[in-house]
Image 1 (cartoon, rainbow, N blue to C red):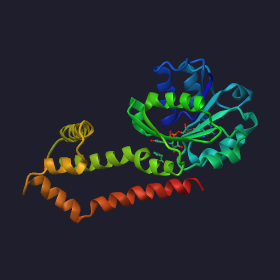
Image 2 (image 1 turned 45 degrees about the vertical axis):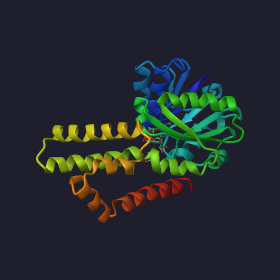
Image 3 (image 1 turned 120 degrees about the vertical axis):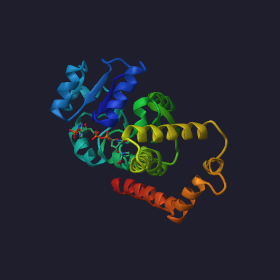
Image 4 (image 1 turned 135 degrees about the horizontal axis):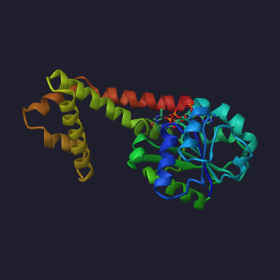
Length: 266
Ligand SMILES: NC(=O)C1=CN([C@@H]2O[C@H](COP(=O)(O)OP(=O)(O)OC[C@H]3O[C@@H](n4cnc5c(N)ncnc54)[C@H](OP(=O)(O)O)[C@@H]3O)[C@@H](O)[C@H]2O)C=CC1
Ligand SMILES: O=C(O)[C@@H]1CCC=N1
């Protein structure tokens, strides 16, 4: 099986490393198409003999094509590759917002899978939501799910509409966590801790809390109650968060991400 990864940026590079490290394919079966000439040369020098700068006839021998380019680059990209695509090609797009129907208008194949991963895929802790066009058969779906699962966990959705919401929740999600962590680290430094002390205090707190929640049946609200002593410090902070309607503001941000995902698809 020959697999082509288009775009060796943040996400494309993760798939390259993950598929190889998990021995799902060899370097000879892995093809890369990257429009930066310098990046292509660097990849070739790093041993990726099948790294290309331009599409060509060689694309016809690909079985699976992973699209890891930005949604804004999609149309231009499909214009350059269309001549080399056939109805047998299986495409997997991780582009935010771009619907399967939209991709169908650009390519001769109807075998399209839309997936939305997230950045922790880099360490095998990713979360990917995915869906597939009706013409993708069970065997093809199974192969793709195995590939995706080298980067973490996955959830299949019948309803493609869910993919925009997956983007708003888990796709962009790591950035929300980093935002909250950064705010806590900045506050810790304002309270007199050094940067490294602030980082350790916050990182270990996040790690501990996530593992605790993950290993129990209790809800997050239940865990909040267990941390909060009556009349204590946590209660003071959570009450203040409530007065600031922090949860509503977080919901607003997530809805904005959903809206943007819908817009990117237009
Ligand atoms: N970053 C994230 O956390 C996540 C991203 N995604 C999705 O993944 C996709 C990629 O995101 P990300 O990896 O962050 O973006 P990057 O900008 O890091 O990577 C995109 C890569 O594609 C290259 N590229 C652009 N146009 C072409 C082309 N025509 N042919 C070949 N290569 C091309 C770019 O090259 P150059 O830099 O030279 O332009 C770049 O190397 C996006 O669609 C995004 O929505 C999904 C989930 C999470
Ligand atoms: O910000 C973005 O548009 C992409 C999709 C999810 C994460 N990064």
